[in-house]
Length: 149
Image 1 (tube, rainbow, N blue to C red):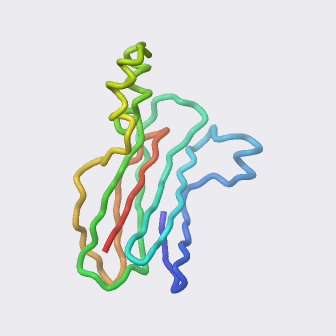
Image 2 (image 1 turned 135 degrees about the vertical axis):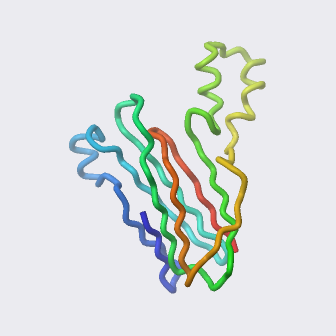
């Protein structure tokens, strides 16, 4: 997946995303739909990437290579990677796993339903306005990657 920024700040993406017509016609039953969308402001790019399949069956994670171009001249940028999956930002998974939906339990797991960092923020080098980030993305999950300078 790549995100290239034009001078006007627009973002162009290319990825392994299933097309809308194909999804409407036959769903997502072969290869997973790995897609994304991005935004850019004066000092930040945010990219949301998903890995979706109609069948909620175990599968290996899909490799994602996020390539950002058109970044400003900076030596390093701050990258934060948030995740929603079975183990991050998922209070409902905790309730379902325990089989308990009592109000006291909901209050206890509510913090696990907040958006969580996958790992600590990191300063990564930028070369000629270009940054590449690679990561595995589990099936039925979403990553939000923010890049700030």
